[in-house]
Length: 231
Image (cartoon, rainbow, N blue to C red; front, side, top):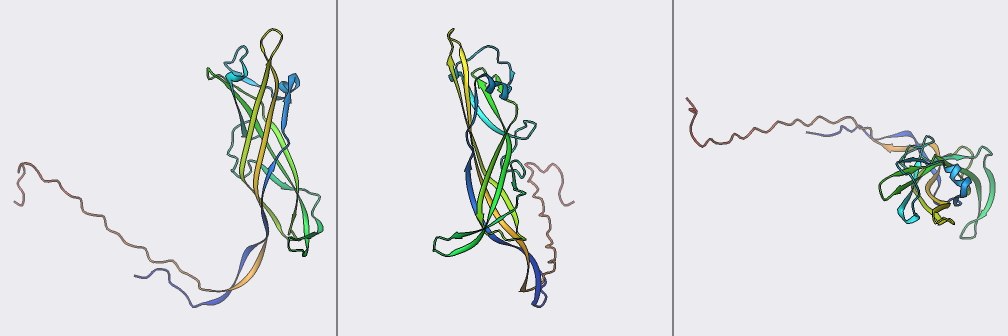
């Protein structure tokens, strides 16, 4: 029995993406700070069951990536954090490589955008969730990105750390001071272009299906010859 049928080798042309440049970048956004009454108004918490005030050590704080509606999403899912190239276009620059050579590169400007919420939970399991908060990160990279190449940007890691600060007021009640959010994004950036190449190749056909048979079922032996056998 043979597998794939092979035709005679021949020169064929195929289209494949060629990678002109590839980097992995880790970026930390400036801290998102929500301070005082204005900060609380921006966060616009919606609470389920929390009534009254709690000490800071009675609350757990979590930062969650969401869509524009505030629904939690997987940071690594395509489109969870947008990564787009600036419409200003690319700028040609000369750069000195580590070995001292001069290279003609391009300045590429990228923008990352997304949303997050702050989630508070007290020791009783009651929860407060903020309204979705938008974040934006603008960056510039020196890349080999000549005309005709396409930017491929993939989020490969995301981290969101949060802290919540309260102090006691004159009456001894906890008073909100600020919430601080730190966001870190790791992304893979490639510049690609489709090219046609010639290769010495063989064209395969489908192989034959492998036929199988079901195994026979074992019949347990009876303790007593209740039914006659072979008659």
